[in-house]
Image: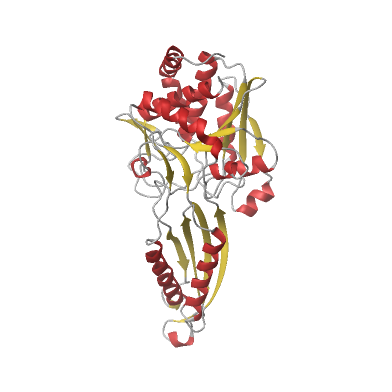
Length: 413
């Protein structure tokens, strides 16, 4: 394969334009198979994806994670997919990873969350933006590459995995741990207007606050676990104010923060609650030490609990996802994506960090340089990801597919 030219880039763009209706239909078919996590019954979506890929002549390896591991993890089924496209000896192997699992739709939708309805140039549905869109952009970028550029060296692998929402350890982490893949470079699902080279870490914990149930008519005979939990939560929220005073040196990332996303407890209105459970999410900037962060949170919780007579706590770590920091080898990825983003998107794509956490860290932790780029808007807010009426601008899908195809042609030249 010779060095790509403007004519070859234009030919890639034209192929994607000619097949764009097919790409949209492919994405619609993926959105219409739910992958709500929890409960995390995601093997059916992997089966459907493999069927659709077969229509393109792509054989998807199905790597089912053992049921015992999946159930212990809190999910129902995971089948991860790898599509290997070897082009010849020499050259690099580039992995493209997107995740199919998503949070449940929740309330407030004005469109069917699984309808993949198109209105005014936008497709609506859960996972249209994050990240089934990049099942489509990556697949059709590779199809364009093979139809037009016809690479003669290196390889591309599509990694379609189903464990991003729970941390990735049974998605890309499982594939890497079991030696099923070892690419040289990788691109993970993202948005179209920036190249993400770093991201926050994430610590998630479950805190169980124990008191003593009692009849509400004689509350003094019990210990109110809810009041205990409120005292603990106030201590944690005070920490949040302190976090705002800490700033990251990574562009795109501001400061650490903590969110309590779920609370449950009590048995009835006329009963003093004997147990309350809450789950917290602590985002860590790249400069922080995860062990120190966890130790501090445990100390704050235990100290606050100790200030309330009769209150005890159990603290369980649910997830520890390390931050992603750039590896020096990611420069060819960044430069190629920025070059073609400028040409296709008509603007500079900054290389920045993001406050999200992603599966990319699992590749980077194993020495595989990676970046985040894909089909989506300028911000998470615009995409409605994890909110009602998630949507994707179809033009972003088209142009991101072109940027990725062009980038692959450069990296495999």
